[in-house]
Structure formats: structure tokens, C-alpha cells
Image (tube, rainbow, N blue to C red; front, side, top):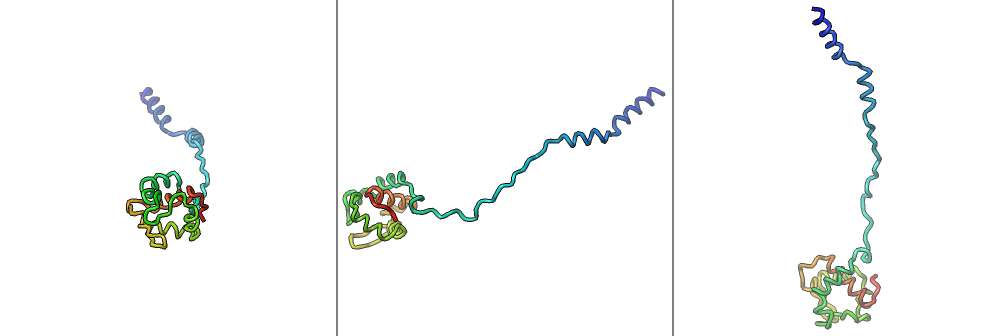
Length: 142
């Protein structure tokens, strides 16, 4: 019976829980570090036409959709190297030039169909192509 008593006492002692040991384990837990992250600004700064355009894409779009009229000057289209015409066009402001190219326009030299007659072009593609044409003609966009 004394062996049974010793075994039971050892069992109860091992289950009794050592509060110091539990506290040490809790204290040894890894510390989680957090950093304060600033929220993004509510509104991104507005992009200007000069920073929003992609001249490389503009050349691709021009070659596929615009060059057929603007290279030979078909129906009054300003030729790519006609700096005087492009300066007069740019003098209207880029917002107007882009709008005419996107929505279409009839003026003293002829008609510009909306998106050059290619409805699959995005507005940004058209803006890129216009910027490319002005850049190639040596005209500063305003």
C-alpha cells in the first residue's frame, strides 16, 4: 500500500501545476513588434498630360491607326512633319486637342473622325498618339 501511496503522491505533485514555471513560459513568449503605418493620401495628385502620356505607346497607336491619314495628309489631316499646323492645333490647349481626337471634330482643314475611326482605341491610346504626333513634329504640348 505504501507503494501505491507514493505513486499517487508523485502523480498529484506533477499535476499540481507550478505557477512559477507557467509565468516563466509566458514571459518567454516572443514579443510582437508593430509599426504605425500612415494612411495613403485621400486623393492622388492629378497627372498632367505631359506625365500621363506614353510616347512609346503613342508611336504604336500612330503606326496602326493614325499614320494612314496623317502621313500623306488625307482629308486635310495634319502631316506628321507639319510643325506650323501642329503648333496651331496645340495652341487650342491639350484638353481640347485630346477631346477633338477622341470625340471627333470638323474644322477648316477637314474632319477628324472620333478615335481616328477606330472605336477599339482607348481614350488613353488616343492621348498617347496625339502626344507622339506633337512630339515628333517638335511642338511643345501645353
